[in-house]
Image (cartoon, rainbow, N blue to C red; front, side, top):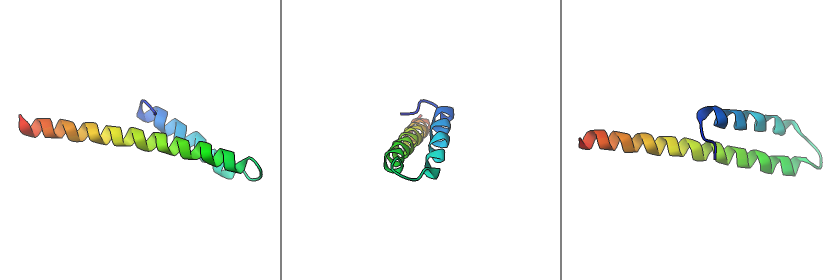
Length: 61
């Protein structure tokens, strides 16, 4: 999973180039891109969950 927003963006940005590939390597590269997207989404959900948790703690205080 990406550890920071920059790492997440860099990972996704590099995977976007894969979309332009055609031919026999396209299926493998699509899998690589899918994994990059999963990593970015997992990172984003973690950030969202942390922010929600902090808001809940602030309301409880």
